[in-house]
Length: 416
Image (cartoon, rainbow, N blue to C red; front, side, top):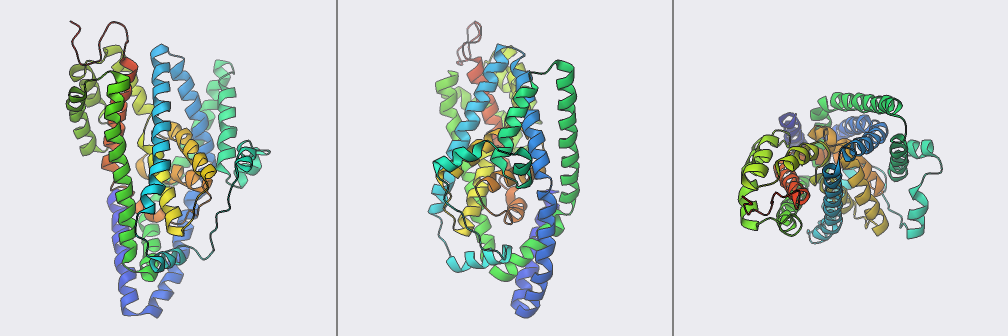
């Protein structure tokens, strides 16, 4: 899928640039055909977002509740995941707009890029703190879903999910299975739509490059650079977190997690890195075996620290393209929404996760969704750094939970 999408990106860019160079009138006619194709593909993806997000949040609450009920270690792990996710989301909400404010802007290029993506003017109305609080709880959950109002919809899903945990076991299991089936069906539909991703990306990139020229590729390069920088920064920040809150020796921790990071970079899969993580935690870092055996598989199932960073980074880049100053209340909304959605979307494949979870966060910030098709095409490039960050966060969580566990040391000093 990654190679097919990148092929669609390259062919669309070359075709659009060539048409614009050979015959501008022919390029305009090609754009008139390509733009509706790209919009149709995005609409097909967008139609799955509301039921998928609703289901994922309810499933995520149920899974976290079940994990927390399994014991004190699991509850500490869930708490560590939540705190690290909140910290990562807050970092992205602060860093992404700040970093993009230093990126040189070409007003003419961005105007052409906006024009090639949408025909409608895009504005973002200021949202006061009072308005933000009033919109948190939906007066009508069905109306919120119909309007794709993601924050009220997620709040309703959270209430529903927590109330669901109060039902007796059999009825709860039946409803969880129901929502799991809905999520699985939506994922199947998204996979069908993503099968046409090369065509959709080709159409979108052709229209953009025919109108905006080769400069659009440099703009996408800024997006790739932003994500890679944030992933690397968060990974580096995890080292002092492991030292301060996990009682790790910095040098030993860095050496101990390196083999797992290498596996993560080569496989781009946290699940495939799990055996290497367990080996690093037990044999190189001295984490209690009971902690490593529970926390690391749980982390792979529920925890992906780079997810909120990805969602907010993509939404911030869309705001940069359109020149929109997102109010602080909407940024806070997006950051909280990114944390909640990430808990229920860890097991999704990369392209499915990007479209199904980035769309709600972008929508919550009051931003257009058209550029996300372009960002999907290049998002596979920073995925190496994202996986390394996720694996590093999993091992950091194991250190935090394992600190002081029983009589076993996790500080890197042998207790024997």
